[in-house]
Length: 276
Image 1: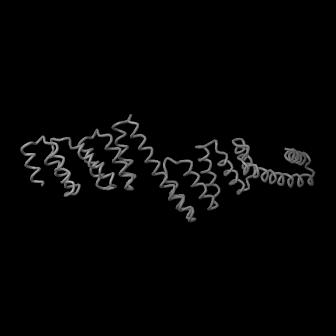
Image 2: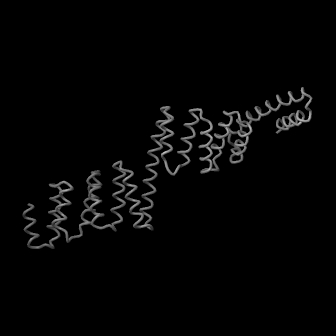
Image 3: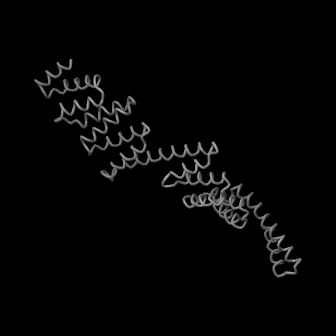
């Protein structure tokens, strides 16, 4: 059959039907590398970029990702302006777990076509896929109580996100490294300053350090964002109780030492706090 098609095309090189049928036959008898080589040698004058792209698209639909990737790449070699080939190549690479290559493909395309919305959308989507994958791996390590690994994996997400910073902070919290937990909770709060819960988490870390004034400050911030944050309301009651207990003990010591000028203001503060 192949010889027959060749004879027809030798007599009538423009016979598109014979050419299409011959190529379909070749697809079934050659691997992708052989097909590419044949087309380059025998159909160099044709629109080979479109031919390679269409074949890549068919392979892609069949989930033959490695072969489709090779064909998309060849389409781009033949026509470096082929936007759809860049986008579908990146999609295939991402589906084939070659996410870094997919991002690289789209970054290359974005440089060539900086105003193309499809490329930007695809790059945003694949970047998010990569972040989600890293978050899932980090969360798995956290669930397995492998906190050092979860810190490492969360930290690999760059630029940092609220979720990655919260992951690092909660991992340090689980290790009872409260200073580092506070540091990363604060970084998360910078990215999401309207999140009442993050301010609450910082307050709880200060409670662990028995830094009651700082804890109260962040609980005030939490409640300023959301006055109905029940956890922050309850924590504030406990923190005020701790502050009052410390003040009362100091007032008693000062009173017994006849330091009335310091004892009385402390007692007044406690009374005012109880009224509020």
